[in-house]
Image 1 (cartoon, rainbow, N blue to C red):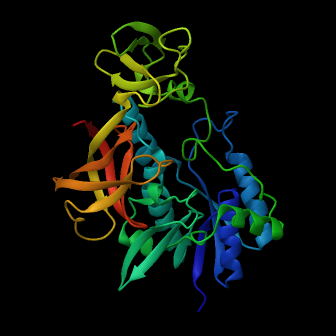
Image 2 (spheres, helix red, strand yellow; image 1 turned 60 degrees about the vertical axis):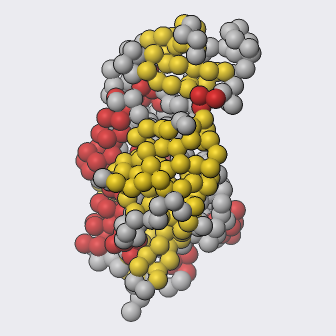
Image 3 (cartoon, rainbow, N blue to C red; image 1 turned 90 degrees about the horizontal axis):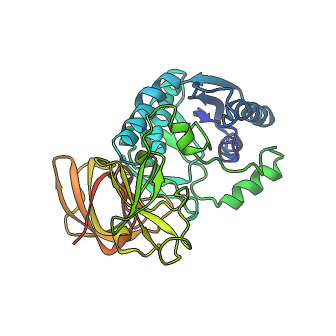
Length: 362
């Protein structure tokens, strides 16, 4: 019998080609459009209406049914509230990671199973490998689009019920498939910004949910050189939005956030992307999740990244205890930030990771 696959159709080209490929491969394909944000549905930055129009148009072109499901309550409780809590506590969470583990591969997956799906499919650039009933999460073949970083918190059940048809394709291949088959969104710009909320002026958006308090921007010699809009809105390594000209103050190089003093509401900045305070030797990560059973080896050379747009760097797991781990890198790493995720790999296999609690400087 043909398997029933429910595709999360977002309106973008990746999910559109996912649905097209599965239909071509002979699956019984239906689509669901997820509506997960309602706070400012008429806001100029909210694209959900256009997303739905595009998703319906794609479904009609492919010849599959599409329905709408609303997970706004789940999203606000399990993703957005934790994101806001993190910002209020001075860290920089990545909501896309929780969005995947809690919404796309939890609420959406459970809903799809109730509708009779054998599996769900999404447009992620990643691969799944099964060995003796155990599932591995592998990097996508397109190194510039690999999204395994965002999927590291998936478990065995979630992987066993998921398909990533784009995992072995390049982004250029995906756009060509869409264009060849007259999918109208073949040249649509990739979405960025906060998961399901979109691109917005970050500080202005967060100010609706977090009390702002201006404070001083200090250089590393404790000289006041500017004023910030709220220390919570900034992240380690940030350059834009500081409003302090490098040529007017200091040595002419651009300024970067090197530290956030939450207690005193101060932002510490240094000049130059190679400023020594931006580089750390290791991290302590908490709320660890390993995709396969058992812990990885201690003092074994792996690779890891602490941001999505970052090359893998050689590392060793120094210690694992009480749902946390200490990871040391072979070379100092730039702008490792509490709240972001440490994701560990062995070759192209994603082992898992955790949330960065603090950094280590030897």
